[in-house]
Length: 489
Image (cartoon, rainbow, N blue to C red; front, top):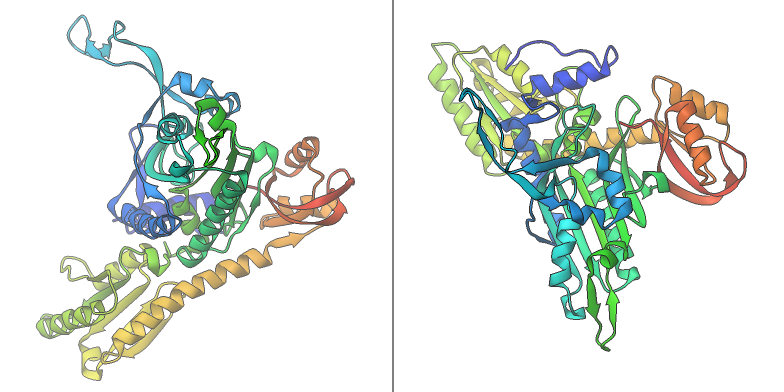
């Protein structure tokens, strides 16, 4: 692990973000341009996120399955708006074999091995899944059909940044089929609420959610609902989306069912998903200039115990340290004893601080004499002295307090930096300022106004957050919709 410092957030937020990822050993750039290698510590965080989210997905009656990585080009051509939305990001497989070059010194594509039909490397799975659903669904008894898959996605991005935007990334995508519009709309909102609750309870992130504008909705959807988080630099990060697909895909792929009266009709569908972008949201929401800060629920290591000893008292300190680990493990999972002898205690402090371990326990000879340890909480870097005898109960309470404190900070940031504005000059000044944040304003729904706002401030509509009566922030026309605007990643 690098022992280098971390760029200050106020000095260069982008460099700070990359430093956190590097110093915490979360990921690194791959030899494949635009792709990243997620390192074991970073992947352990993703596994914890995946585990917690999977529980909530299954509580909605959804089952996990897996579908092919490759999608026939003709499947995309069936839904015009869908293919238009992804056309510029698709990777295409045209051949299936390599061969030696004529001089025998290299490898090249065998031009004689051209596919009869090109295959798209999965940018999203609606088309391949719905071709299958058309065979799975025939009767009302087959509905609702609720399927989720954990998979990798490829979208050929021009500008990439680890976790936030990469050519290949990991995600979950839920797809459901229903008998009625009412059922599908209920599912769309249930998924949206599930994501917002998950963000709050697991990632300690307070978010805003609502319907997206026509220009921001998912390609092929009737409506899209989004979850928006606010980062420390005042920029918006789309955390997740839930799509009402109506009967659009059902009509294209022939997903029909016969109801109990014998009538045949097209089904109603939804899709919804979140990705490793959540990792970026956690990093940018909670971390500081010392390194990564993690909510305890997703931390791969929740408590690290560091013994500090000399040759004279080594055995005694190590025995007590091991006893402490065993004591804490009775109530808390993911406890680590850092007994490495080839590096200093100071280096260890620095390493676990950068990796965002929620609680660090330091124990030395003097501590043992007093029957205490030094406890350091990562969210505030506060140090306290705790009795060894009451440590287990205290650590459990402290982990809960850290989780709640991080959520409290996120709520305060969202509230403090969400501005309700009815003056366009003030609107632009806020979004052009260093702190930025979210702006709530009325918008008439006209795309020309939306484009004008984006041109003037670089801000886009994030989601609809209210109704009522007001004047469009851009053109002054009457509006019944209040929208959240922000400069987004």
